[in-house]
Structure formats: C-alpha cells, structure tokens
Length: 416
Image 1 (cartoon, rainbow, N blue to C red):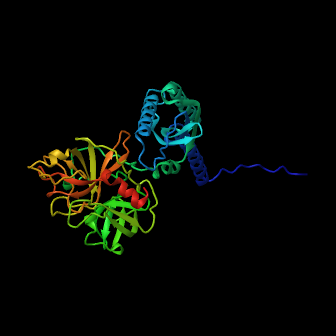
Image 2: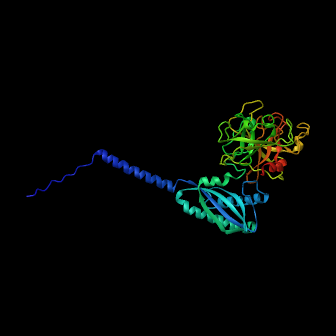
Image 3: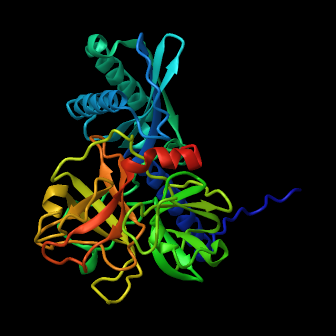
C-alpha cells in the first residue's frame, strides 16, 4: 500500500522576510518619490516662439546694435508679453520672456521670441497649450499697432542649452543683472558672474595691465595709451572671466592698431583696436557688447557703468574679482569748468561719475568699458576709460573716449 506523505510547511528565515520588506519599501519609496516629483516638483522649461508681422520690414539679428525703430517694437512686444502673462491664470509659472530677433522675410518680418516658465512635469502638455493661446490672444489684441498675424504663431519647447545658444551671439546681453547702486570700484563692489561678459583683461607678460571690451569674436576696443610703450603684440594675452588670474578663456594677441592721430602721452584720440590671434567662442559668460550707432546721443544724468580690475584706491591694491561702479553722465560744460578740467575735455571725450567724487575708475582700469543700457537693458559701449585726476576726487570725474566719435574709424579697420 502507498503511504500518504506527511505534509509540512517551513517558515522563511527572519533575514529573508526583512530583506523582502525592505525591498518592497524601497520600491514604494521610489514610486512615491517619482509621483511627487512628477506631480509637485517644479522644473524650468524653455520655449522658442515665432510670429509674422506683415508689410513692415525690420532687420535686427541681435548681433549688432538695433535701429531705434526695432528697439521700440521689441520693447513694446516685451512689455505686452509681460502684461499678458502676469495678468493670466499662469502668472505664477511665468519667469521671463524676450524678443531675440526681428528678421525680414518676403512679406514683412518674422519675430523670434524666447520664453521661460517653471511648473511640474505633469503640466507640460497643458502649459504649452495655455502659453500658445495667451500669445495668440496678445497678437489679436495688437493686430492694428504691429500688423501682427495671430495665426502665424508657432511655439516649441527647447532645451536649456538651446535657449542659451539663442542669445550667446547677441551683443550687449547679460546673464546676471547687477543692481544699480552708488558703490564704486575704488570702494570694492564685486560683479556677479555673467554681469559684464564683454569685459577683458589685457595682460602684459602675464599680469593685468589694462581693460578692454569684446566687440566681436576677433576684436576688442581699448585705450591707446595702454600700448604706447608696450606695443609688441607677442607680450600680450587677453583673459576673459570675472576672476583676473583664473580666466574662462585666454587668447593671444595678433595685432594692435592705434588711432593714427594718437601721440603718447597725449589725451586725444586715445583709442586702440586689439585683434585676437584666434576667435573666441561665445558662451553665456563670454559675449560681445554692442557698438553704438554714430548718431547715438547721451544726456546728462543718464545711467552708465564702468568695470575693471584697477586699483581699489589711488596707489592701492588690485582686486581679484571684477569690480563695477554705476555712474552718471556729466555734461562736458560742467566738466570743463574752471574748478574741474578747465577746457581740457573735448567733443571726442565724455565725463562720467559724480562731481562730489562718489565713484570713479582708477589705475589700471584704463581701456575698460563705460557701458550704457537702452530701454531693453541691452548694453552699448559708449566710452573707454581714458584719463582723470586721481580716483574719486571731488570735481575730478573720470574722462572717457567717446566711442560714437570713432564709430566710422572702427568700421574702417574692422568692418564692424
């Protein structure tokens, strides 16, 4: 006869049960974490938008200074976009929007936009629909003033890298905005990374000697007196970045071009071009500044900024981090008063600072930029640090080479 076997059950070891429990808990934890991330954690999204304007031709590729008409239109579009999104149901998700380019086409112009929003990934599809709808409505509301074609609006999501590439080749655009204050270079206000990406350090035999401004991938603008006694291009290198001795990028100098009428140690025609041996690669931290149109006019008390690694006070120490000072344009008549510079400031020069001596450039800031922001906060090179009496002295503001006076000369040498 067959014998029925005796069935028995053996329980799992305690360590196995613990292992299974921990595994299940880990899986649940990851799942919950992913759900929370997808549903609640916000992520930044970037978009490129395009729409058509009929019957009017604009040509602003953002690589050079725009015409006043292009600037006015871009500013108006940016203002209307800001108002549209800030007064919408997605105002909390809105971060930034701007016009990148105005380009001519067969029937008018194409407007290229860049937009930035922040929201949870779960809202990705619905947010794109809402953003496009809001842009469409904005265009409908401004058909008459812009000749906009609402049906032409296109919107696509792009990567952060692609977003940066849209503006890297543009002139005069900052990555980080500095706050306008009364601080001065001689009192030590360090710049933010990306605030002044066109600033360069002219290094003579490996040491900072003067400043310069990047105006294209191959050319910089500086002061002639920086090179008067040091004109061998092989002795010079150019550093880019806010830390003077730890650059993001370094380039050798191929050629130095003095203004033909400059005579050392004179004050007149104090301008020079520096040609790099190799082009720079534009990044979010290395960009060119816009050259102004020759007809650009500055008014008394306009805000400007000077930057550099010059001494923090007369005969003082040098900073490691790029310094910045926000100044005011001073009328040449005031600068030429008997208690100031007694007529030495010519029409090819301009004064900036404060007659009270609050802020100023200083030694070894020479050649650096005096920059002016337009209505869109795009920066133009209006002056080159040239000369002055001391640093931050009362009634002795800084004197700068007026770039608009040499706009044709710059074009004749560089084609810019």
